[in-house]
Image (cartoon, rainbow, N blue to C red):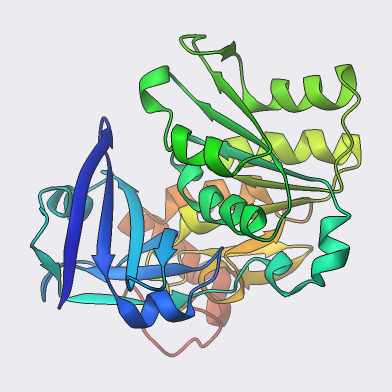
Length: 296
């Protein structure tokens, strides 16, 4: 059992938990995720690691209520426990393995939309701990939905916050802030990391491609099973079939077919949609094995 040490509501339908998971904490890196399961009848829920404390042996997760399982999870309190808390899974962010001196010569821009602030935070924190100052844009619909503002302030070189309705700081989409920084203020970036809703990542990538800024995105939003067996996170990257949970979750955003991924994400939610996907995708539907049965 994996004890919950802290349970906090951050915003409407958005929750944060610190979980006692020493093995995961000792091995995880920014960009990776865990799979949580409340009990024997609960669903497996993949969640990006928001933070970790190796000394205390804890993992921080942030999640949004989107269905019955996450609603049950939101009812858990400090002192309760998860039956399973598996990880770290997925590939770590590429910069973790880059030469540190070369990394220090690059200018990074991190863009977080909504709950995407959770997976962006450990990456920015890692940069800060290694002496690299980065610019961060955090966007949400309203002020009340801005997440981890104080935590982000503590590790970001420059933090820019924007809201769709203008209720806090800037008004507008994150793409407008990117354009303002690059076009109007002459900022130069070597890499952009964008994490948030699929539609946000799509339009960030369209803009950064025009601006000539290589961009990394996290496809965690389309994961369901987290092991490559269900086929839910199948996507096309640079014309090749990939699976977010085993090949990612991070990919070159300029190569991701977002339209296909978003359409597939909607289809996968219905039994008829899954049947159509099985028919069209054949042996590559379930992680490429064609044998696991997946959602049959």
